[in-house]
Length: 141
Image 1 (cartoon, rainbow, N blue to C red):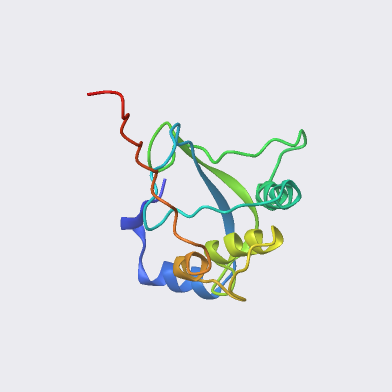
Image 2 (cartoon, rainbow, N blue to C red):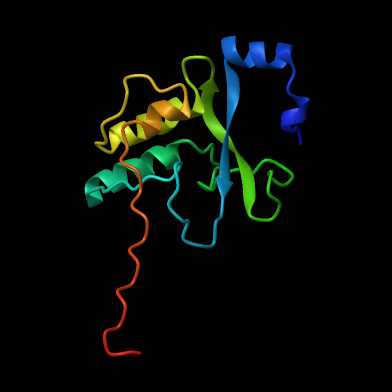
């Protein structure tokens, strides 16, 4: 499986200006992530949540039975992430960040008209609130 070290200038230019096949990278966390500068909370109505889920599902190329098609081999992290065949093509004007922004727009979230970079997506989302610290028990010593 290719890694970031395999990226060359010709490959970067080709993928920037010529449409390339898409892939979906899925990571299973198995825990509640802690808020930081890259994690944002988004409140959605049930209807808008369904629209976001539909956008995500539409990003997977599925087999005849409707199951996403994994790409052979493991992902970057090992057992907890995988790559799947995606739908459509990526290029300079259709990046993974723009795909994310389109899904959020479909779910009624205000987004930039074009979001080629992660900052374009994160700018419109309020920072996550850190977890509230528990109040001390006034009865305990």
